[in-house]
Image (cartoon, rainbow, N blue to C red; front, side, top):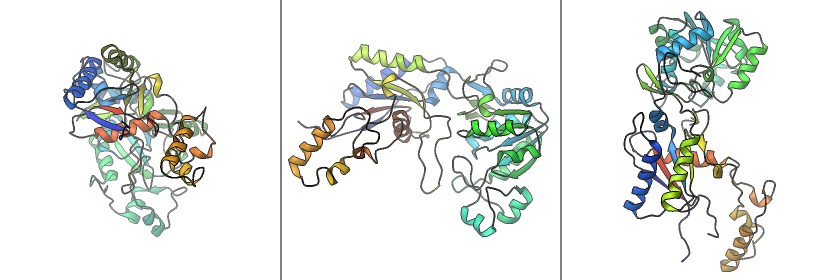
Length: 396
């Protein structure tokens, strides 16, 4: 019988993960128990995805704000520090800012505007237009910002992040000065020691600052790259991808996960005879059309993956074929023609008109985004996602 269902994404419930747990064993048993309970079978090229959060928890990859403070002080001097381009987030950045402020005497906080890197808005584009402000060139003091725009609360959280971050810095014993600018060079008028907190543009920001005379430039990816007094760390990403754990600790992005994904893949092959793919995923990469927030606050979507998830989709567009190449066909003749076209795909389809409109993104980014939407970030209790049929096409 012809299959009538394509891609299926299932949230798999697991026990609460604690430090030291054998995560590979737990993931494998949870998937197999779910299959038995729900009456489905694993197939070759299914994808088992594990959220980065439980991987870091199993690794025990935590650090205190005191560890952040010590590393910041040692690397940036402990005097006046420029903290530029942070995202507006209580969960993602505020806890890091607490440690940063504890490692400095004064923080010059430079916020990008009208929004942060991932789309959280301080002001709207319409407000800028009404005020006659050019965000590409104009530098605003806190006083000028308040004069022009007053208090602006985040539409989802209700937080005025300008006041929230300022108060937090003072509570940690540091002075604070707030400015608003989008050119990283501006911070050098205030201090030569800079911590740039942008995520996806961090390499460019570092380059510009160094070329323009900064004495010390660190990114969030340079803080906690090694343990401080026995803390967790992340050699590649530092504080990037971290989340609030308690009021004075963070959970860092997981460290090397290659052994984990390979272990899960091998266990499934041994127990079922099926060759599945496995990945560890963080934030998905998609933009909310209402709130304008781009989800990806992690440095990457896929922390680690098995080899079969490398590359990009190599697909043809069914509606293009139906409306162009086979526009005079219908019914079984159309189905047969399209099926033969799919079966006859050869090599890389980049540049082929029949592939235009297919999503030009990496497989790990696409599948990781699907998994992030499936698992959510709240109380679903499904930190493992099983994706079936993702690599199927119209002919399967």
